[in-house]
Image (cartoon, rainbow, N blue to C red; front, side, top):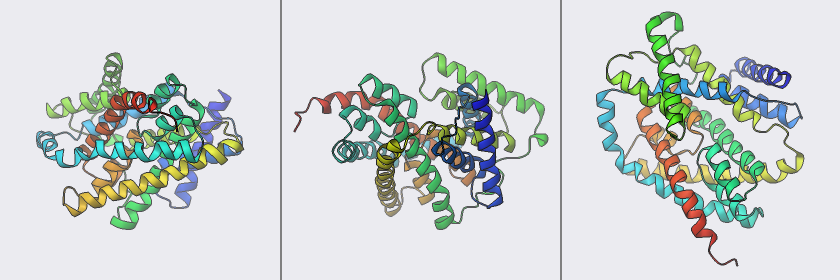
Length: 342
């Protein structure tokens, strides 16, 4: 309990520091930065897994609540960019595996699942089953999420002048109690139903689907209030930052350094795909960037929500990316690992 308390205090100080310095997304980037610094200083930290997942369900409800008939129909028109997602995943693996294996000396399993831009838990599970280094995988994926989520707000402000200081919703006091209760039911029930049937990303996708059904039926008429979105950002940011708890100097010099180099590769690849999409006028540049930047699903949902982007477009591409990785990664890993060692 002491470690959990320390973690919350550290994350809270991060929020305060970002507010005082007028930096973007203080409720998300503040906890990430503060917990990262504390971890590097050796401060013992720990989060509450169940609570963190519950906070993710808020984002699922927020996305689902935006669903309209017109929005659902528009999904069919996204195929021109959706077909690029598997291609990008393939290129990431093609570049990433040799990068980690030959340049940094990781074994094949660790290299492969470090390169795959899927969900953290899935990549850790697959990597462990394949005999990979779970600690290295955890640090590499945490760094991927942290760097991309930290870089995008500054890119959004610099190129499109996006105001990230606007409240992400209306105050809770202005919403009907019946709507607030309905959101709670959609979040918890959607999460547990999705978990029971084995749906990946259950804490986000389950609530999103159930809230979407309720919104399309005209029952759910509001998004979660600003306070709920801020809380979700806080716990998601804290979760990313605490992944570095117990990190050693050797791990920073090797695992984290390798991850930082890979983040540069990922950002360059994302920029190339965004430019292609822009040149062929397939989608607005900001939406394309948020859709193709391989950050965490929850973190990218937050950014899309705060930036006022087309939520359906962004989420559809990230869901397809994760599906592509989860379905294809184990198969591809076995095929590639059968190649002669040279």
